[in-house]
Image (cartoon, rainbow, N blue to C red; front, side, top):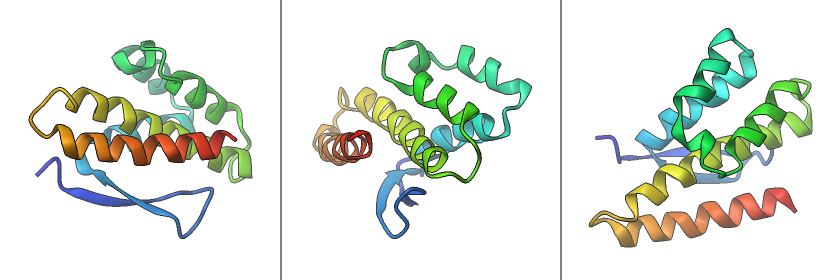
Length: 119
């Protein structure tokens, strides 16, 4: 099932784990993977995903991840920020559905993590 929760361990904070719906995790991992590999597909991935144009901070996090030196604290932080912001975007689309309460709870947890990482 696409909404089955899977654990995500923050790269910048080993041991800190949040459960993310599998669908969101897949989308987020796809974008983070392209950014880390800096593949030619990265530019296409940016163009293909409407959430990168939505002013959600995803594109800024992803571009910073591309230029960050691999394995550094900055790179790990932006892996998390990119991943979490994609999940936030996907989750906010779900808040219009009948699973609104679940989506709101996840939204609060994701927003708190992003704020904490940005401070």
